[in-house]
Length: 435
Image 1 (cartoon, rainbow, N blue to C red):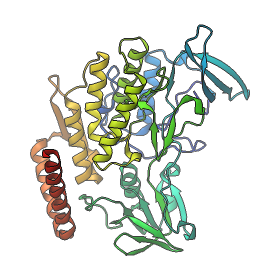
Image 2 (cartoon, rainbow, N blue to C red):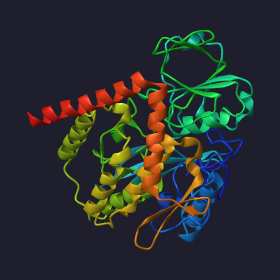
Image 3 (cartoon, rainbow, N blue to C red):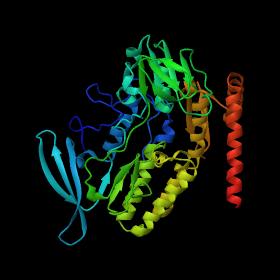
Image 4 (tube, one colour):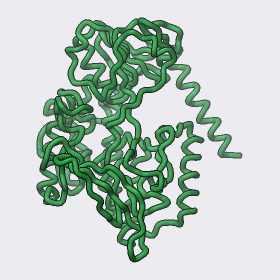
């Protein structure tokens, strides 16, 4: 495990000025604690949407509780991994590791590998025609810390995912203007400050700014890419059989198993998921395959399944780069892993609570983290605001109706066009299936 110190757990949850790629100082989770926790270790009592230091403390406590630290060799970096035949003829792995304290390398052999290097270290910069002409500052959310650097500046925020919304809203407190550029068919129906304006997707760049899909030109001093990350496994040799193309990790079964060499498992690849529970199920599933409790299909069958899954996602209009984006499919995925490995199914409240949180995020982003969530003994979701229990379904109905009317008032043609095209796609899909 590579770290920037010895004897500590490190990841995107620790903020260190000396370590690039750590989140902004004010970062809080976008999901509530009751949804995020590992199934065998709860978060401590406190705010539902936690500061990143609370999550770091949780991971450190988890490692101590289960006595993991003595089994981790800190301060080491994996340089190379390649398949090798063991003396008994069984498949094994040759792993070259560098000790960061001495700069010495050594080689070890193991019979199974968990690949858990994450995917938040290689920023993704989408190509923009003419960007080389742009004279302003270019920055990725990977390197964002706090908003003071954007005082009185005009900032183009590219992307309106969780990081784009979080950072855009924070910068809007000090910037002259923030332009939140996204490809959504309608404006995000949340009430943002006057200094934050939603605009169409960027098409081209020039010396002073950007041309959008609707033909308008926006001048900006900075473009801040909130456009995600790339999958990267620089330590895997070509012999491992893993290829990353258009941000799709090829030759994997269920986003985990190396099809060619099933003793290599990738943990945590899916995006837009509830990370800790998903990682737990992936690890348990991979262990079950190693113990022989799950019988994997043949190489040919796993290859066919992967191709079929990719084809189905393309039919749904998803490009290859979104292959590992599970979103609403994540619970079906977890249930599938649990069923095959003989594990306890995910709690029934999880998909319902996620829907509630995402609706509040989309329709009232600036305030959605003000709500608190708990689960009663019989699995009922309890939502409160400033200590007062909320009638969730009625409250969400009023919120959605209010924001929908606001959207119609501000952008009637675009909203109506979106819903008409959505209905037409549903009818087209129905007739295609009927044939």
